[in-house]
Length: 187
Length: 187
Image 1 (cartoon, rainbow over the protein chains, first blue to last red):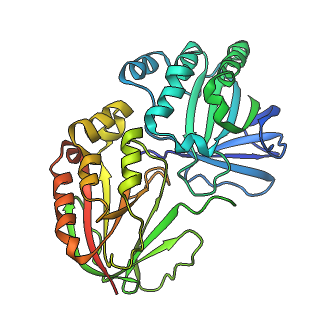
Image 2: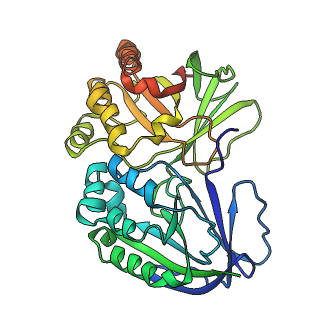
């Protein structure tokens, strides 16, 4: 296989590399409270012991950014695993069926033209590193549509708080019907 | 669960509702020759006996059609399972990594503005009924990106041949690096 694995598993329980600092249910049904989280790549064996839940997501092709935005993102963003980025966040999100019934151009219009999702995210670069995982097309019954994973330095916590607050105030977020905000620190 | 299953499994072997009339490898590696195919929905039990291969795909939200095209498609298309539509076709396709690295707007440009994919498909409506399944985001290592399933009446075979010939002549098809054309009849 020449392609790297794009599938990741987020395992919540009482063990793992990341220690939970807070779990806030922003919208919809909560997830069971955990104390630790571990991120597995496809093929890694996941111990079932002490697990309370697992969420799966797959990285995929870009759905909304245009060429200019893509260039700017690539130029500004930094990767995961930076030594100083010991703060983590996992934000699982589900969007309403109404969102998925929209056409691509209408979704793009809400996503960027009216909600400025890409521009809001750009403001947090390179401080906040991010990896988006899609769940919706893994199976028919995934509990979330997206899992976004973030890493940043402790002194950038306010930047991160601003980022999520700005996004939650957008028209795009009217389509979110489930969102959990899990903050973590490397243990 | 209020949502219906969106995941389908195409099982090829020596048993099944659909009898294979021909299997043509258009591009890339072939699939093992089968005599029969059966289509399963998620949750249906799949007998492993006499199976040569299975392909999985999931129906999903529209990626390219605009509002006007969507309306026209909905007005013209007919569903699967029409009693007279005893001819079937399964066409698994994979696209090159170059395709997936393009931005959404560039893919739409190739898909419709230069290749007229939607307009070509529209010409075959309502004769040819169709269901598109996505595979790419089911896992990291699916053998195809899309499985398209077609049903039509025997007298519309020429319409179907024209449809696939027209699509294969488009710039979009330069990005296809694996394609198998499997023709079937209800047995």
